[in-house]
Image (cartoon, rainbow, N blue to C red; front, side, top):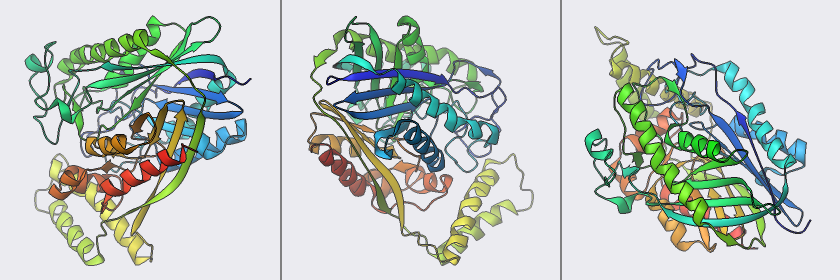
Length: 450
């Protein structure tokens, strides 16, 4: 058929209760005690003029490159697709298992990781099998009272402030204040088949003190909207969340769980309004582009690595050191990576660059531009301003999880995102990631024009 076809499918990827949860600190032993909301792998497939693509969004913190490659190979063998026709994405939910390979940031559960690629692939198969004629509509909807810029604004405001309906951050211009909603409907009946909602914000309403499995505000909101629209499947596409936290963060468990419904409702309200307001779009283009891009490392020389190792060993071996001490646990995280990096340099490995997959998918006027980073707002804004596509959407946590892509100011200041984050990810810090990532994403956008 010559017109646009679309198909949606989802698979439950909730792990068993008891699995460790990922995020918020070193070796926290934050083990799950119940399921608050199921985790899903949700896939959307599209076909136009014989070209096919499939996008899958997972309610997970991130995916290792190994998992990405296994899924792409499986879907490719099943459907005859090339790797650049398959996009794997994560919402970056922090109330699920450690699927990104982060050092010390949540227990690695090998049985879960063993079955996960197959479940993600099944979501893709199901979406491809359900391709049928569809219409496409798009809306940009106000989406306020959810995020704040944690690098430039006050983080973790009191609940009696941020749960007010009229709460806004001091610097809303440093966050997303609108969400994009892409709605796909059955061409014959007009019934809603599925949608994609795009917004940039760390899903961290529930934090270190919480022990329930769920997809945080994005997952809870999407599950709610799916219940309101039986049979439809919704994908959340994470944007530039690297420097944006949810307004509720770092609160006690009970307060966090109660606030979760409030923040999720704010997002659901915006998406719901977007589904109503979405204007029909002509889709005469379906293109994809993907390539491996080297990013320069801020190389830690052997002498510097040895000094850093000695500093952390002094903390671990100090008289009275205890595993209940956060400084000791953090030292162990750093030692794991620093020793590994030192050994790799001694073996002669070239660590001067780190390779990540950049991918773009063009669906009519919309370009999904994905990178395996936690992208900061300034990078997204620069790409959006220079892109050729009418509606460029920069997506983080796509086809891997390589840590933060700090903007120039954050990188120059140093700290968690620029210095510690890469160590948790088992890698060298980046040298000029802002400029290199902007250039790579714009190159992906350029390739989508022809």
